[in-house]
Length: 289
Image 1 (tube, rainbow, N blue to C red):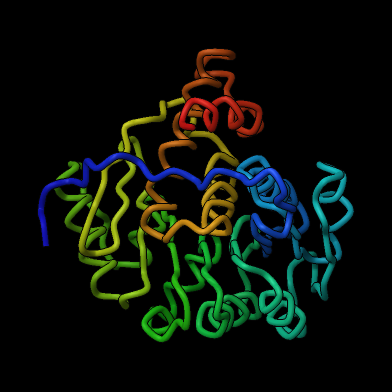
Image 2 (cartoon, rainbow, N blue to C red):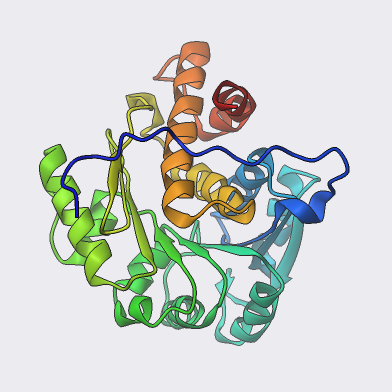
């Protein structure tokens, strides 16, 4: 187990064949949103589309569906059983059915918190046999049942910011790169062989418990609502196109930060908002190709 950061070249997406079709580039299911936080679900879904996923469906509570659908006509949406604007317990069976038809699941942006939601998240993490990105409110729910990670039937990529990591691990990661790397690697290695961790921050750490990389792109303007939801969508799309979890997380962190840097050049770090990242993703991908 090397203690040195991974400095190998970033992975690349496969070249697209001239006779390919949308089914070749993966079906992403985004499980996200609630009344008042529909934008988080839409940002994740639109980022997955901008990052090359062939088909993206956003499953969201009925109270949020119309708002999510209004953001982008290329998104497919499905409104499910809700209670006061958030997913209710009976939504779990259709969510499991939808996940079985997807190639990758992105779970968490804008979900909110409730006892029913916590149970839904824990069942999805423990039962869905597809790669899954776990973010935002889903991380807080998962913190109540970490053994679900060890029993997960497919890879799980967790994307916490330091506060979410503290809830997961029971302690903050520390301010220095060395402390953050050590905490992230320890968590990934202790919670099952299928766990990859992307610890967000000024220098995002990506690790599978064995290897680790430190991302160098990004800027302080990205410290604004919704940027993490964009990262979730980018990562889900890369997984759907066949990259392994560690490779997908490493490339997603780079592209997300590069899009943020391009956006900051265009609008400045003070005025940067999450939709600016969506507009910059195409250039970030072209620069990486």
